[in-house]
Image (cartoon, rainbow over all chains, first blue to last red; front, top):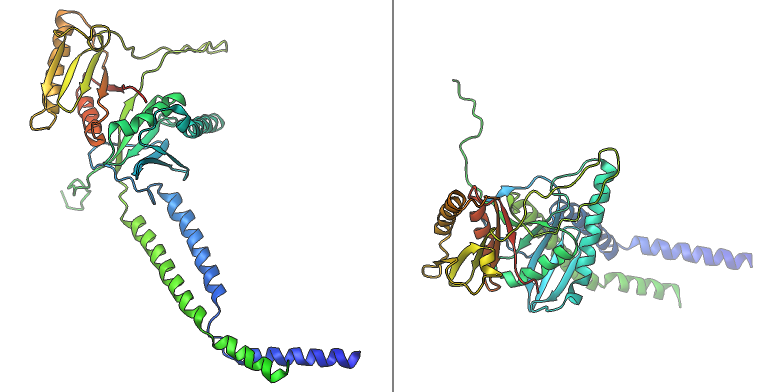
Length: 184
Length: 184
């Protein structure tokens, strides 16, 4: 029994030696693992930094007042015969462009209610509220018409959100009011 | 299975480089996705602004029996004399809110500014409404409460809706734009 174990052990050692003697050109799993880690880190860092990443809504370029406070941000874009709403926390809601009843909007209304409640709760715990904390900012794709946005306004009203705004991209122009070091 | 055959199988397995092709392809497309996301994040403009709008709310003040006895008062109220603007594909129509509700059949209390070659005459609308609001405040003693009801037709593109809201807000007489419509 002892000789048999020793023989098996020596065989296994020999197998391992032979295997390690062969050059290991490629082994796919380390690369796949590192690729997945990079992808996850990218998703968390980049997507968390700017909610516009990955949103297909192409907003219009128009000079408007910049926003400073936090708010409930969402983008609205067409997808075939559907309207797709993507929120800043990556929730996606979809309904048909010719939606004619409130049942299709129920999940979206429920989400808006919970977001508004969260904002109010956060303000109460912080003892500090931003002016536009419970308002909604809608980044509407340029190709949409007002009838496509009406269900969203209905959902905002149903969720008790009366303040909202449409997002635009401010045109970037060179200004000459930057501080200079010229002697006076 | 003999030991040499095991070595032979191991060599054969390790010499099979079909994984390498797949892994190189996966790595290439993964790198492409990460670089594309990075480039998008770098080139994404941060210069965004908002064009605010509101929806009408019914005051439902809650009694505050606490120490401060805070009582909420509405800042503005919509009434029969609140200015209203209707935007269709043909023209702007403006007048009192009463003219578009209870007195909808009357034809002498509404004003029209037609589009020229399909282009809405926003500057003309704002200038005309400024004159109209100040004139009726002076002669008919109708107060200016800086609120306006804007009702776009459903087939108006959203960029035009946003531009009209922003244009109306440039007037010192219209600081709160309430967008109204049939919701569904």
